[in-house]
Length: 374
Image (cartoon, rainbow, N blue to C red; front, side, top):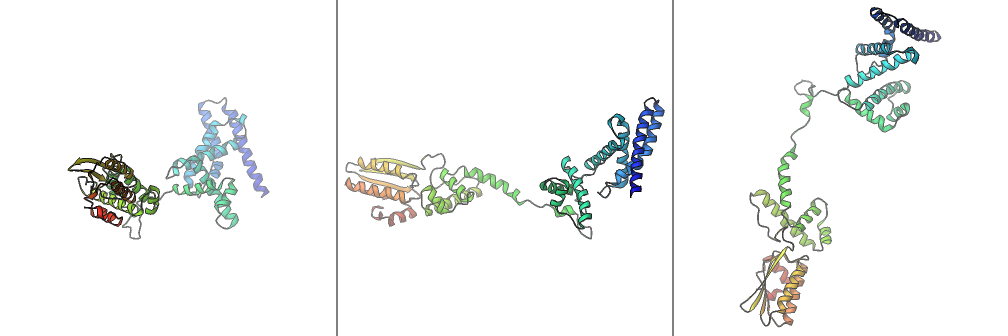
């Protein structure tokens, strides 16, 4: 071992001495003489460049190619060497190593990854081989990180990016018979593409629904809220929520299947600020209050105000509340009608509820207003 160290030291010293001698002799040499001196020093240093190249063998690159790259780095080191700046050998090691690493980074990676990750990937590969020899097993990423004094996430990133060094070809045979290629097994028909038109259509139709219905649909299908939770937040019954959701979905389904928009059987839509229309007419000895739209928590007070004003102006005439265009009455609406019945009784006027649709009629019947319906 001492003899080998002496031999290696003597070689390095010989290279440094040869480089200094070259720099001295080339200073006053002519063009042909300079080229001859350069070639002579290059021949002396070629074995050194070969040893540098062999340090990087076994990393997926041909040794002959690495030797060519190392020799190119050697020539660059000879051309740029300045004796006043230190040892030629040290400078040549840095130049040749940099040239080989640049070769790995720019010419051998199949997928582009950042330079920092490429350099670290080479160091991780070398450390992994050394630790495998020392530990007689494959080292863990944490052991590699400790060996290189870098963070564990950086090592994991380098190990993952190493797959980009030599990616598999999509044209590689996928089976033993060679009939199929690897690329044939990847990808397929994207079923979501067929839904793009439907999603765009639904998005436009949702904007045509009343604001409350849009909010309920968003809470139910985007917020994963239960009908009971929606009812609590909106201050209506769970049954009312169920009916509104069913009607909204039925309208969307019909609108999706037809070229023309179906009629919305409820509030007039997002342009109606109240969701209900009321008209008061007098004639034939009665005052008629025509109601169109839902009578619920949001609209009940407006109807109450109109009915009370109508009762106060009866002057012996009867009061008719026309419910033919009312698709739904909730508890708040029933309370308004009961209040109207009480007010009409005090005013000694006859109150009649007309045109109630079957569902509304059932609600009014169980609420004690059966006698007022006609």
